Image 1: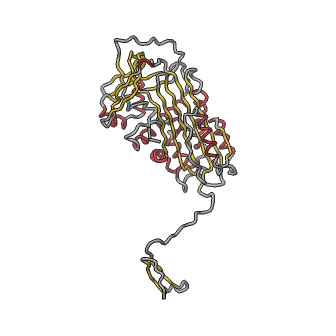
Image 2 (image 1 turned 90 degrees about the vertical axis):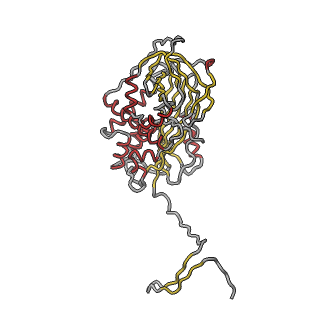
Image 3 (image 1 turned 180 degrees about the vertical axis):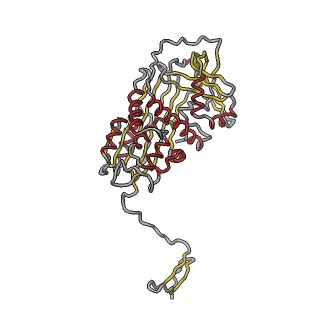
Length: 419
């Protein structure tokens, strides 16, 4: 798959966006939207803010290794999958994961309760927006795991727990089928194989499908040129709508916040005015900058142009997460997940992330999957070493008890001479 990456937080930062106040066209009237205020207490707000801080940190790390590509990730999915694993971490491994996720000042109960609160409420805010969260834990059949670990993830993450014969070739198909169902068939294959030492998979899947509050008329879609940062250009289908939305026009950037359904869910588009400033702006696109933008948005009548999009992305998040501070969780020697099992040591082998995005006249559809692959280092006999002397070598004949060297030689080419 060609690496196509995109950031849900930045939401089309690098795409050409025609946002300007319109005086020639009448904006669509905004009816009573039925927008719901999402009630959060101080504890929930702490966890949500921590999740947002993690989102910008993760995006920054992923972007650093994909500077010439788009970036589309779901930090919420990554956070929830790692949140399940956090319940099995111990000691320094727990602290490293806790700090990386931004939960350093919060106790485990508060973290779990907030995940549960978000799980229950985010899925039922808007009848015109589908947002589904699914969690699962797949255990290698015959392995013993602490019931307490599985129970806490059932209770707070509504995780479906299944035993599975990982040696069966159908096991990969079974897990991928669960993912496909949880993402409305938008992501069908994440796992290619199950390593022999894998003993557990913790999976989060998200599916989002929202109708724009203001539909983009199909008859106004135009073929336009999309200008790329490398100086190249490409044809794209550009859709337009005139409406009254929160927007921001500054010397450096322009912003449009396009709502879905009744307005609880929005998609924010941010574009530097000068293409040469894009990479620099990206480096400074932090949680503080995001907060500043939200605080300065003002409703305005605008004509918006967006390119139609549909693509997918897949990435291994090991290195970005290590750079954020949880490298010990990936260390086969030092990782401590002793609250999952005491039968064998565990470490995180892979964190696999895959996403899908489609932006059209009707709305936006997105899906994300995060897989945390837990592995042990003690299953099976040690590998048999292979020593093939297929190039020049030296040899010695000696006596062991005295250490006396009896003969020495070297072979530059194999000969079999007749005497």
